[in-house]
Image 1: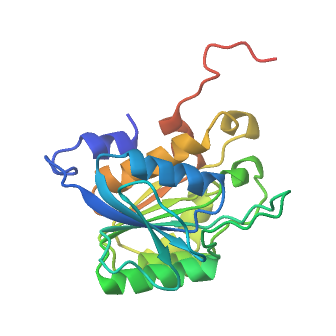
Image 2: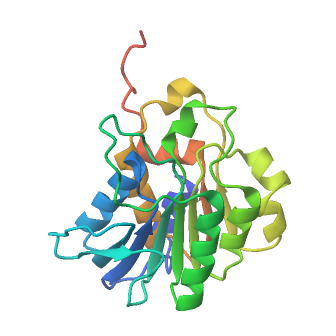
Length: 238
């Protein structure tokens, strides 16, 4: 049983009757962010979802609200979801209505939303990094640390390029020191990582933020792969 499974099954780590919560999503300009928004809208755990936009947007989904940035929702969201992924280039040159986040702007947003009263935050980085073992993380250590130090009760970071040795020897985990940290990470081979789907990663992030105990949880490649399962199990490799 994994650390996440232990935490989800452990006594006191999950509210007996979770109340419907509200969420604010920023940076959902790519495919991972699109899946995240869908998961949140379909989840019975959330009764209200806002997303940041940079242009007026018609909304027909009852519990979805479009918020023109740099403004935030008039109400204080319980949970904040930040996607740090590049904005795709459309062949038809259609501009996405959603707001893109850089590593720095994600940290600034997280700090500001915590100051407003948000209690939990999740940070997602793109799954394309799973197939690029030598790639640079989408979020910088300093910005990640700023989010962790903002004072949220619960932090979930989906960082597919993390590994145990690198995470514990430098950056955010070293700076946290004796804080409550559960490192769920290690490098995997490209072949092992390919079966992971964006929908699975988005669902795992939402489930983790809603179900894990308070503290800092970093979900790396190995744990993401473990939670997502392997659709290639039992199949003969080509």
